[in-house]
Length: 225
Image (cartoon, rainbow, N blue to C red; front, top):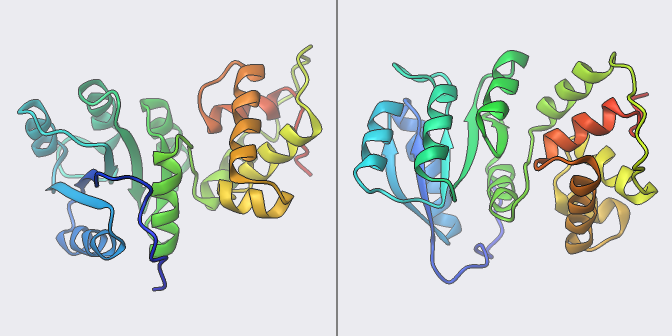
């Protein structure tokens, strides 16, 4: 798989924890990140219980990648505990599950993003960078599911309108495009895309991209045709 040679913009490596019960997959992800550079895997665990024990023992990390279907405690139950133990860390779901209940439960538990395992190494790296930059990336399949879920909801009138550009950015986010892709599509800088998203958050009174997309759909700001 082709990967960029440029590591994440940081002098210190990003400390990463992997929670995945398939050892081969853990090793594969670790290998991709080692080749990329800029990441340090400080812990690999096959169960959520082992990961939480290590965190309670003082293990620290900037980023946590977790599966949902784990033996013992589920990933969804563990995400809430991880967020409590590592409030500053970003948590990304990396799983094979795409059913609606698990997706919404994981996001509600506090996951900062949701990626399906079938994606490429390049997509994983791009998603990690977006999470670390403060984004809430969603796998395209998941973004489509969220759109479908809210398609039947009646729009809720609201005085605070999104600008045409803010709507465009959220529309493309809802389709699963990453910030870099949105910037290219709209011929904007990634910084401008981030600013439009932040303004949308303020106007919609939300703090995450999935919530912004959902709220914009509820208010009738996005075209679902």
